[in-house]
Amino acid sequence: MQIEILGTEYSIERKKISDDILLENKDGYCDSTTKSIVTCMLKPEYGSSVDVEPEEKRILRHEIIHGFLYESGLDANSNWGTDEELVDWIALQFPKMLKAFQKANCI
Image (cartoon, rainbow, N blue to C red; front, side):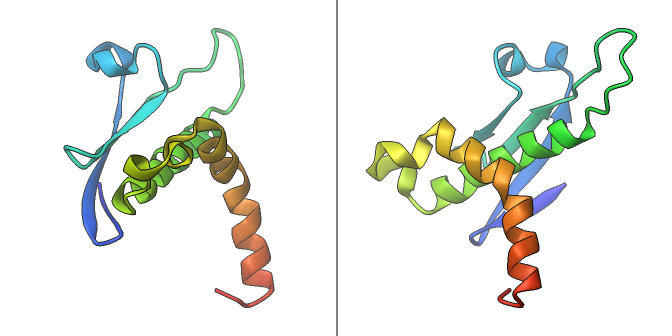
């Protein structure tokens, strides 16, 4: 899949951890040099009926937000441009923010 982030095309891929060494210690990454976003395919614990889709979507939002920060140049100018806590917060809260913006008719 391809998406546009501030005028730049990024590819998005889901991979198994065994297929990408960079996923061994993280759930996803955004590579601003190759313009690619990769997320891991999560598996529920054995015997669990937990739906992993919401977490996979949150991880993808997280990496897309990194892409926006990179394409804005904020990763080079200050530490908060790469702050994982901030990126996690935006990724977690964005669906609620979007819903509020839509309800207020300001999108």
